[in-house]
Image (cartoon, rainbow, N blue to C red; front, side, top):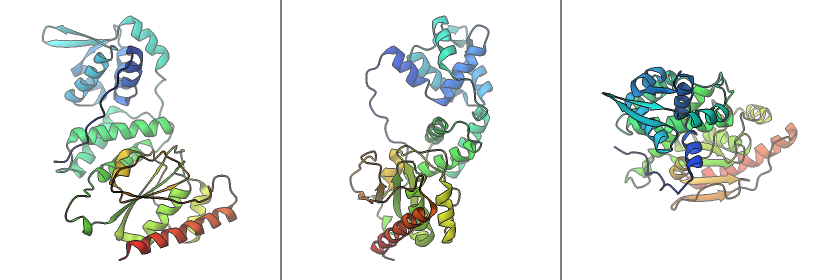
Length: 308
């Protein structure tokens, strides 16, 4: 079973920075909120797991991280271990933690997404790996657009794409029979990269597997881009702007960047292209059409290099 790559070696950090980093995870932030709502700011693994609709081992892992970051105190009482927020930490968290947004997903919904993708990737990834990718994807999208009404479906789609990317094996002897993996990257993932990916999917069909990402993605694809694609009969599908992550870069055979500078990580064995293409942001539709046609020509040229 292939699993997630090893985590980077942690760097030394102050107590405060460790605490803030630990609370950056949505599950740990939810745990902190639950403890703040308790009269004595304390609870057990079992009670927290029930409240979050998560498994006890998962909650135990997050509690250990919070305890190691000196956010929680741990106290065995008989057969149970109680975790509590020290008064000084509780006072700080009242200021640090944002109120829960209507778009925040419940533990039950996150757990369902994890369960569904665990079934989809049975035999490929462990449930723990699926859970890490789902929670990380949720956190990245929530920070970008926490008020989105499609946060749940976007999280599921983003996580599924990242897991599929992790399943690409460039060393497999059968890799010549698989689709060519292409990644298009621009700054906002709302214009150039979406134009290129939609056209390549439409023309390339099963020969290619296309992904997109942005070094600083915004909340939605630009309406002029959608209109320009519709004019030439190219569907956009359920695409939306997504953050750039290492897993999609590592999966790619070809990485095409457009205006995002050196934001894209470099992995050996990948082909990197940089297309000098104007940004359609804020441009009238006739300019967007010209940009679309420029990208269309470049995509067709790249597909011709791939052959049949």
